[in-house]
Image 1 (cartoon, rainbow, N blue to C red):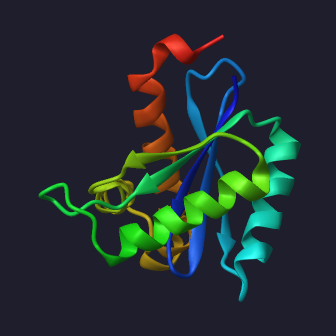
Image 2 (cartoon, rainbow, N blue to C red; image 1 turned 30 degrees about the horizontal axis):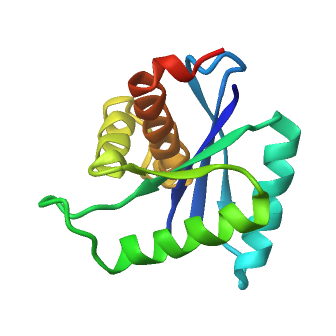
Image 3 (cartoon, rainbow, N blue to C red; image 1 turned 90 degrees about the vertical axis):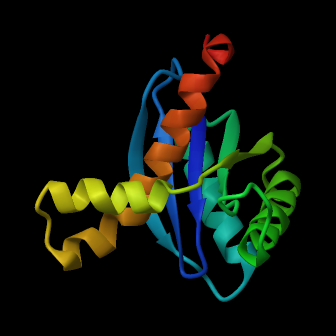
Length: 141
C-alpha cells in the first residue's frame, strides 16, 4: 500500500510518498499553493496517480495542549475537500513540531538558509508520513 504524506501550509504543500510496501517515506516535491484550492487538488491528484497512491496522510497542526487552532481548522477543511476530490482515504495525523524538527535537521546538515527554505516543507511531509507508517505496521502489504 503506497501512502502520500502532506504538510499543508498557507503558501506551500510539502509532499512525501512511501515505498510500495509502506515502510519508508521519501520526499517528492514542494508544491506552491495555487490561487484556488482546486489547483492544489489537481496537482495532488496527478502525483497520486503517478505514484499509485492508495491513501493520503495530512499533517494536522495541533496546539501543544492538543487543541485545534485556526490553522488546524483550515487543514481539516482541506482534508474534507481532498477526500471528495481525490476519492481516496485522507486521514489527519498529528504533526506537532514536525516543521521545527525538519528545520533542526537541516541546520544540523549545515544547509544554507536559502536551501533550507526550499526543502523544509518536503522534509516535514517525510517526518509526518514516516511517523504514520511507524505507527501503522499492520497496514503494510
